[in-house]
Length: 572
Image (tube, rainbow, N blue to C red; front, side, top):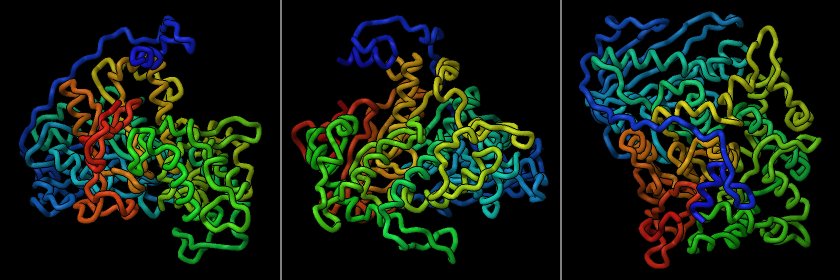
């Protein structure tokens, strides 16, 4: 069976199990990249006056002492903090734009560069520490990388309007990374007397999208790509969210409202009344009842995600209300809507817009509800209106037949010469054969995704990995590996072991040829140094651990040992 699955992943085995030829298989052998060698910081404060960088103004460079920043309880070692701006300009809208950034350069450097992709609509320069996992206890800076972080070309106050300015839209999509990458390497050379031996890029959400886009556009610039919950088809994901809001709306309590988190004086329809927290707990329990034991252990975690999708049916496995709603059942109408939303958005003609969403107990997470019921009414319509559509198109999320207007993503005009789809998605995302050269030079991709992510579907990421395999680019999973995180919502939280480090395993894979198969993950119970995950079930150990397993293997109970210990499970 393993040989059969391997052959199907390569696209050389038909559905009938017959070996067939596959012309897409890469002909070039995969290189083994050498390990980075470290160095010591030569210059810090002098960087402001001595280093001349194209289109760049270094605003400050100062030493940050050990312990001034911490991750969890650990002191981040001494480093140099450089702040600056690239491509300062007056925008076509009369506003001042620039690509703001900061770099943190450790005194004891490991010879590596890490580009920290930030999430959401960017607009803020997050601390360049390269934080990893939920409640992070470590990060790229802690591990000795030189790290850059940016605002992707606009400031926080410009968040609602930057997408209307053509160049700011391009910078957010992909050009900020293209511009910052060579500058950052030059700055590193000025600080250490040599450039980085190995370069990595990573992030979660939009940061994961930045990393995936870089793999397609900057394949010669980075050796490792850490891709978390990637919104790599962000326009369609946003459209799917609005489509979902329109499904929930008829079930919501008429006239009920909640506060608008982006407008203190505004309100939003209370879509959460269509599928309340107690009702989501009921569905989560039904999923666990049906799927928990598929991995050999009844522990409140559904590790066998794909098997669960075949086993669980919301219409038959969740109690049906026979009278008024009371939280422990769903009405027939609710079940119909839940099934439609999880199946994924479609156009009125039946064309699929976005991937389906896996059933998982994390549906009970607060983060799940926020994305489905709040952000679908504010953040997604904003992005569609100002960033993804040509021309910019106003959106009423509960009234417009927005799913019939897919053409706005591919359109261009004299003002916006690249489409919203082009600026946001990795070129060739549907047929990723353009990654052949990236693979051949020895670069690697590690992806992870919360199975209960409500905005970007883990199924969409899984399907991307399958397409890479079918293109012949991942024989034996030697180029890309995907780690689903059961129970986890968007980048963290949910009933999940969401504290983990995938950067270290990625480095070992790139530089030592050691492919990751099982990566340690922990829950964040009481006393956790990275912060407590308040959504953990009360009967779990506060220190529960699990292996994150490379797809398609599943964390499976060995049949003996504590259900709270990763050592009792193996990836099979």
